[in-house]
Length: 361
Image 1: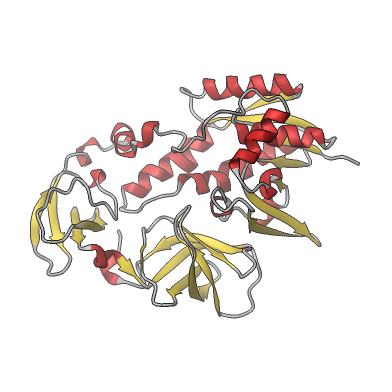
Image 2: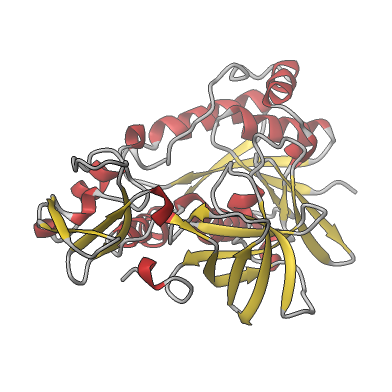
């Protein structure tokens, strides 16, 4: 007996190929497109609608404007306003796409929600496992790692065994899809041209914070060496645009909104060996309070062998092994992987407990 699938249809080549693959396997398929903002989304809906027409499937639009603003856009702005660097795509998957959209799809009679993510989700004996896809360059298990086990049970990712994006394009072409040649989308969907500072400046409620100058502190000695132009214009790890002469390049190492100070230091001041991860989402059961694994702290970055200590059900400490040190951004996702590339779990990076010089407020 074939299943009924809702496909999260954006009109792009990945989601379109996903729908075509499921149809080719004999499943019943319909498309669902999320309406995320009151302006600027019509092109996406029109593209998805054309794909649905070409495939001969029903197409629904799910109005998620209010939820998206509250859970993703407000979260994005508030994170920057507290000196952290958010990952809105992972939060959107957790709270909107693989949660609210899944519920909408089930209300329409879907057994599963299929997406164009490059990740492997397997259900074995009523348990679910999130694993890296075979396409290492495009793997998106990191972006799904905050999603709960219960929701992952109803998510399917047909592209998981594809090893290269060109293979997806070739499949799309073989299915007769007109969008097989389209370029990948790289930016955050609600920010034009990756200009997040302009987005925050346009959407922040307290406009006084935009140009509220304050002290720039040198981390090595605590001295004030310059004035910043408003903390909203900076992010941890930033090097360009500081305009401070120094023998070595300076980087932003801390943003403190409570006293309106920006701390800068040289590159080694950004590097840490131990950090904390909060709001942890467990995807595998772990019996030991301390265990070794590999961690990924940014999308597309290498994984690092680490020793992880469980502090509580939703807090872990990560200690990098093999003499590794990394530049860590509070607010980003840290995903843990076992030796089989299965995601153990993930959470949000904080440096509060493990390195006081990096404390964010």
